[in-house]
Image (cartoon, rainbow, N blue to C red; front, side, top):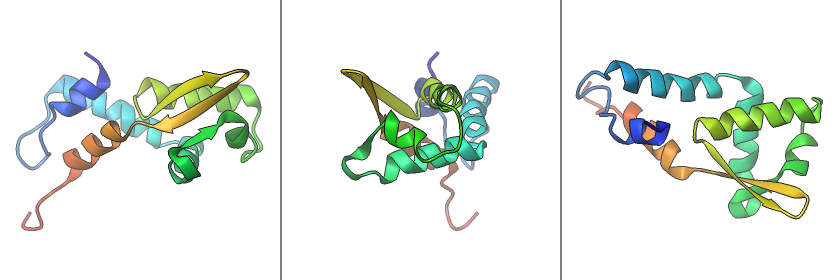
Length: 113
């Protein structure tokens, strides 16, 4: 089952407990977000004008090697937070808003809890 499918069927935490596969899938996303570099990459992509950013703009924001940045981008893509498109020799990254919406819905709790 793909991660987004796991998130889509996940109820808000206050309605019913997650089952084991749901919890494992959601934990992968939070693990990816738990790394400061990946969180910064997600922020760079999210805040970039037009909603997408060239990999060249991402690598320039860090004092890390290109292979390290590529690894972090791969992790974010694997958990469904980013998508990419190759254009000539550059790759452009965009957020997957559905994944962020599902995470938000999962964590959304009524104010009466």
